[in-house]
Length: 296
Image (cartoon, rainbow, N blue to C red; front, side, top):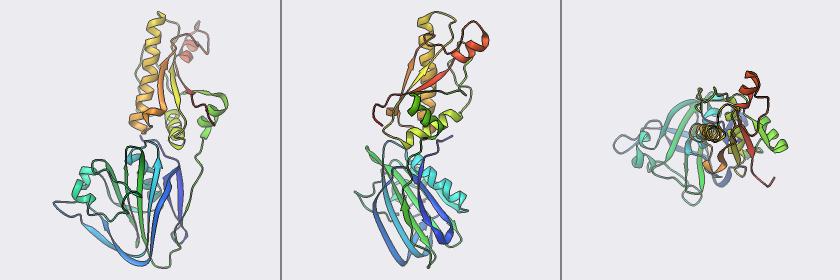
């Protein structure tokens, strides 16, 4: 399960269409053609060229730069979601080699560097259609930033597309982190002595990931805790392994940049309930997120 990125909106009133883009996306270049034609790939390159549709109408092409370490798939995720919600049918969704690699990339008409950058070994592509309206997009990244290229071809008479950048949301977890400095990830529960996460996804991690991706300047430490059973050194090791399990899930399944998350362990040194009852010991076996950023 991928974390849902916060987004900015591109509004096309004639179609009731909003396209989701990563929060913090900065428009680097825009090209508008009042009336024209553009090829839209609808299949991977096989040998030399990719099969295409010829779309005609008003064309808007935009390139965006997104600071941070989000993967191409994470950059594309909110756009794909918004197209599905708007009733668009996916024509092609692929990554690097499944697109056709080098041949596919060079069959695309893209805004050139430095406004748009594509790593030939790491990019994703999406094309979709609703009626006579087409959207195609490429997401990739350099060593320092992500890039997203969006082309829209819509019937003549459709209103021009304008970008409105939405503020990065905090959400309940973000609000608690910023107000209290810490939050317990309540749905992450461990059996006594266990360091593995039994579920592939957690609502608290989804919310934390959305906050971190939307706020790339923020950092957290995941801190594991145990009950008071056993020796302190063993419990400190177990608690750090619990925090590390949550950190790994955030990075690998939710695409949170690794630099934003650390993992530490406190053992049984910071209980939040009595260790004299099973209910209390269960509450003490937990992972907390601690906000470590020092600037608002």
